[in-house]
Image (cartoon, rainbow over the protein chains, first blue to last red):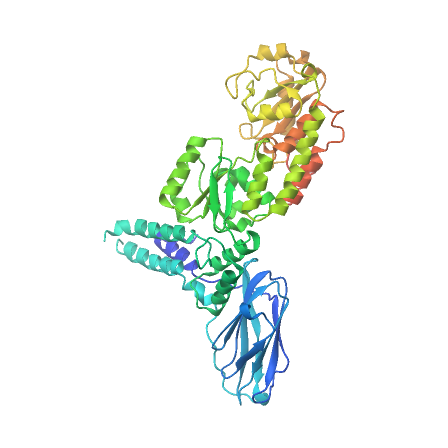
Length: 172
Length: 399
């Protein structure tokens, strides 16, 4: 049997506390009215949602693409740069429109969270390209999952692990 | 810094942060103890967009408070009479009281949120298979407090009215080291208080509907027994000698087993003793001439129960009793009314199952339609959610 020193086990345990867990299997899927919009054309993105009583979706648009409007209640949406967050409250469908740039291609990516079911995951990416012409892709931003690792407790846990490792290492 | 102090300092720091995090409803921006729809949505959006201090567990807690508690703290009163304000649902639970653990499972609590249990529950591999993966925090008499603190529980369950000194001590130590911790105390084995405890615990975990269903199931059995035994004149009540695990040790009025004997319509000629489990003179049993003898198997007479399907072992216990000097003359033996019952179904949260057996043994005609075996199986299948077939597993009563 492989054994580890107690300090290493403790460090591993502390580090595990800051590793986010993503669950595959998506109750949220995305469809586009077109994947090859014309220059400056608005197209519709539809999100189908199953069995999420309270949760959220954050979509990230490719660089150059701009959020235009949505039928989702205005008080349950937040737009920040290329990211669009929706608060889900028993919704089964969210539709929003995006205005394409003069040129450019990339992926619309998304994350969903079911806060009651305590599961989350990624929405499969949807590729878009103005007039079907491919260009270099750019990233839209970090997912909310990364935020958990930055919570005060998680940071403290990580620091604690390092401190303990340092403190015990000196007694060898 | 003294390096020897470092781990302790870090541990205290972690505990302090966790305790602080337990105060207030996450997302309650104005701190008025009400999570409004606008506050919840703002918190959810901020979390999703990635510019908020709330971690995933925080927003999940906020959602549950908003969905199940109407956005308000939940005030509950445990079985010690103490009111505890809950600002968040239970997320990391340590349980020293196995009956509370069993009740939580009856109510559909997510057992993955139980991070540690008492050593007795931990050892019940058949009944609590999930506990093998949980921490073991010892017993209320010898708690592993260091392990409890390392596990950072937000809630700890203790007993309310038994071993109160030990439980008080654990509670005091927890509250001194982790001010934000919630200590909840329930018994979950007493007929008089169990229905209320079911409903209170259901309320704590947001499973009120399930709580009503389980309480109704429990009460339907106990009410059927009480109603069936009601009206029996004192002089006509079945005379019962209840023998504890140990030979010639019986139960007096203060013992829970006596209460269940009386609920089932029995009368205990040795109920007047001052000790909870008095030792009786063998001659006194012959003089009392019980109509029914009940022998308890369980921890102190370790045969049967969930751990083993060993009918022969229970038969051997019964045969030994039948062969005791002078017993051939007592009514219970002459009439073939000597029974063995396992404490798994009479002493804890499952006492209603055992009490149903007692009632049926005491008054076969009055309780002809009572089916303790079916009640037991339904409890295991529908409420405990374990795959356990009483037809081929476990031994709880004999004959």
